Structure formats: structure tokens, C-alpha cells
Length: 214
View 1 (tube, one colour):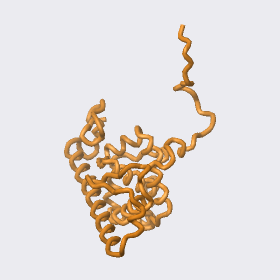
View 2 (cartoon, rainbow, N blue to C red):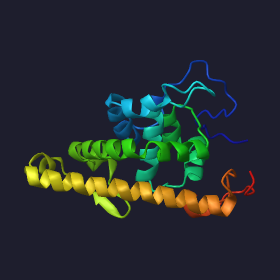
View 3 (cartoon, rainbow, N blue to C red):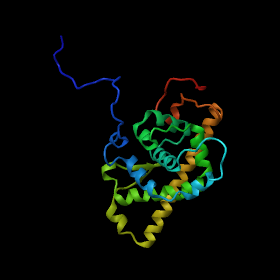
């Protein structure tokens, strides 16, 4: 009879108290570095679009959608179908979405509908991440480009260097959004515009079981 004592493991244990999403990821995780600034940003340009919409159910919160898309793109996940899957399977995505799970078409339509607003918001978050330093978080890869964690150099930039840095970040964001558009277009052509295509290994980090119709 085994005598080794193991840590408690009860997969079917019911939670007596609601868990805090902040406990799901370590302090300083990139998801929080993206989430916290977005909570302070003016999202009026996005929110105004929904003010006069009376049909259908309430939309997903713009802050949540912005966080999820930006985090996905910094992780190299561009296809909306794959982002929708991560919202079910990846802890960081679930934390950012606070349990919400917009489908791939909602994600794709949000990006297209608010493209100009996203182009303005994304560089702000990435600039803050660079200014704060990403030593403890590693490096954020954007289409092959690294944002280096060197806060002191960023703070000491001249006005000219700052303008160049803003231009570079804006170009990176344009490339991210263009890659997302291309990924969705390719998946739409492959699966059809309304099919999830859950077995697409190309952009989701490995093959999964499931039919293209699921």
C-alpha cells in the first residue's frame, strides 16, 4: 500500500468562495501590464459606435476586447479563430476576458470596425511596457522585432529619438493588424466565413482534434 503523501488533488472539488482572477497569474505577468493601462485609457472613440445601437444584445466591453486582441498579437496569435480558442484554454486570456468568450467573428469584426482606434491605442500600451522595463517579463516579440527592456535609455531619449520610437511602434502595430487581417482572410477561405475550423494547427500552436465544421 503506498505510503507517500501527496498534495491534495480533488478535480471535482467545489469552490466555496469565488476565486480572484488576479490569483491565476503571477504578479508582473504581461497580461496585467497590458490590462492595467487599458483600464485608464479613453475608449470614447470605440464606445461611441455602440451608443445608438438598439438592436441585439449588449456588446462586449471595449476594454476587454482591446486587451484580448493586443495580448494575443504580442503572443503571435493573430487568427481570430485561434484567439477564440485561447479564451477557453489559456489562463492569461481567460483572466483578461474575465470569463467572457467572444466568438471568432465577434473578435474579427471588432478589429475591423475599430481599426483606427486600435492603431491609436496599441502603441500607447507598448510604449508604457517599454518605459516600465520588461526585464522580469522577458521580451515582447512583434513580427520578429524585440522591444528591449531598458527603461533608463527610454527615459533619456531626445525628442527626435522619441519621435522615431513612436514611428517604429506605430509601424509594428500596423504590421500586427495587417497580419491579423491576413490570418482571418486565409481561415475564412479555408473553412468558410461562419465555420470555426477548430483543427487549424497553423496559427494555434499545434493540431487539435475536431472537425472543420465544429
